[in-house]
Amino acid sequence: METQTKTPNPFLAIWIKPRGTLRHILDTNPQQHVLLLAALSGIYRAFDNASKQSLGDSFAFLPLLAVCILAGGLIGIASVYITAELFRWAGSALDGKATSEEMRAALAWSALPDCVLLVIYIPILVIYGHKWFTSSPEWMSAELALAIIIVLAPIGIVMLAWRAFLFVKCLAEAHRFSAWRGLATGILGTAVVVVPLLVFFALF
Image (cartoon, rainbow, N blue to C red; front, side, top):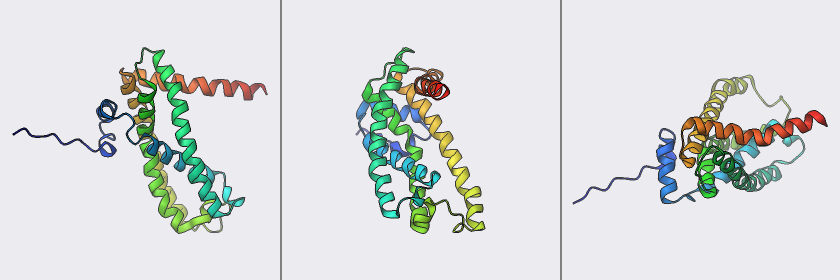
């Protein structure tokens, strides 16, 4: 009787074996959870931007939540489709082989740290609600400020670093080349967008 090898959970395996995990996803079902991960990443970024920009000063809590969830999710999905074409082109310039579908999977799965941060956001929203999105410092106690510095800030830094790590590794695997070329692909694709914007703002 043959022993069946248990397929590893990609949500866990990709943290320590990103290339092998993504290759399994691409070879079996490249569409696996792509839309879900893209939407959750977009929702997290919407919440984060709303907090940084203190949008609670201008919007009530429930409409702000609705906009972050609906618009953030849609923007997250659209972003994966748009940037997938950008990084597919950047990688192909370096002899990469990824298809658009494979690149969407790479970008979506490399955004998994955003989903972790979104889970952390849930108790924050339950406890502090609308106040978390306002600029008023009156509601934030010294203890909460210290907790943010000691606990939340390091978690955010680690997730940001891991997101960059997964991004490079997943780009490389999707294009079937080295991590160094994956890094170059990320830099090239980002530069195509950032450099023209910098030139535009510098001129106008």
